[in-house]
Length: 224
Image (cartoon, rainbow, N blue to C red; front, side, top):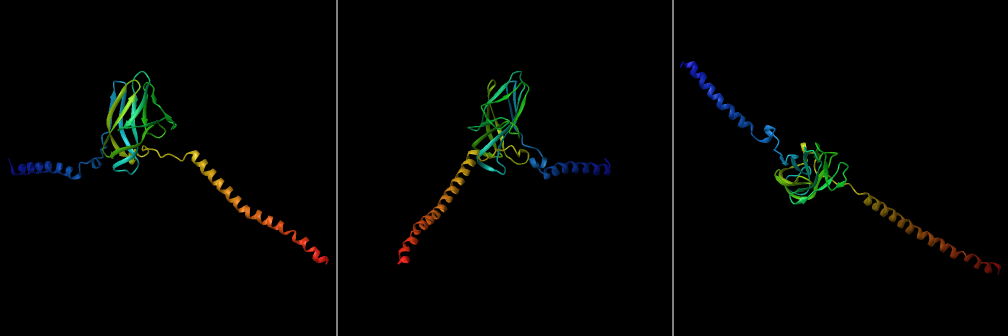
């Protein structure tokens, strides 16, 4: 082999060794490679499929977390009959279900061929008031259907940041009864204040009336 060919072969070997090392230097973590963590998926029989199951905690949470959490999942009914999601659990905590309007419901119905994304804005939701979770880790989720039965899957736990912003547990707005109560208290306080400020005036008027007879009492002296 000629000297020039040997130099070319050596250069090719060096280049082949450098390329993998450069790739390692760039990093193999998910953020560098822009790879999202795998989200749980499962199915019951041939008719019900659940994809991208994620437990979502409030925005900014990290590490060990205790509190409210919501669940997002795409549920598809590929069968020929309607199916009903009757309950959801995150760990051992039963989730409250709401429909598209935000009203509490006992179940979420899927028509034949329909798919539903839980947790999306304007869609049905499933959330728990309290759960012990590890953000960035996994939590057991359990789904029960009227016809298909029960199925469980370990779902990734993520905060409501970035892609999952808007999927976290909703903060309850002040109730109308609380507003009415506050208004009634303010009104009652104003009435009490008005009554208290009116009492001295009444007393002053009575005192003035009582002193009125002093004028006639002086008349006999004037006549003498």
